Image 1: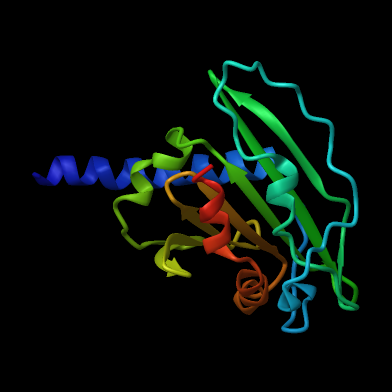
Image 2: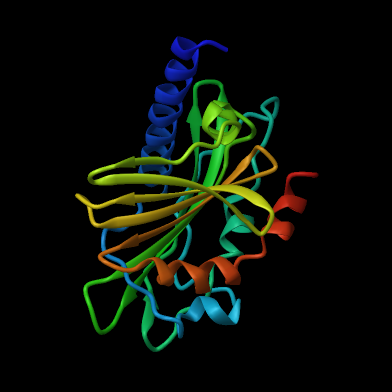
Length: 210
């Protein structure tokens, strides 16, 4: 691959991942305040659903079905005294000809303006899940924006720092289909860890086999 093609792939990867992050955030109604500590309810691995899921459209019987939103919601961590879960949001939306399901929950810090939002989305393997960014791992560093490739529980992941928005986002791809987003607003990188540890990524992967 020559330098021109490499540069185009590099730029295209950034654009794809930025769009991916925006799609996940908009689909999951992600909150904009975040900062969990190590005592987060996520650390106990319990289900943290405190509200009812939003109404979802009834898909046509001939369409390939995504994982039910309520199944995705079962992976949401529990609240704690320091981190209170907002009402669960979930649903099924159509992207082109494909139905995609999602569940999202925000955890507000009771002692600061910080929050963490978790969004789990079943893309059914559509381009949002098979973007070049998940294949080609490069680290990108700009004055106010950084992206770093990593692995989370053996799965490919991007860690994104947006200093202008004061957010840190970790996007993890499971079986080229499920995207798990952990978004910290007004907080620190260490706030991701307890929530990441509380989600069983391998069990999420098992859902893609049915």
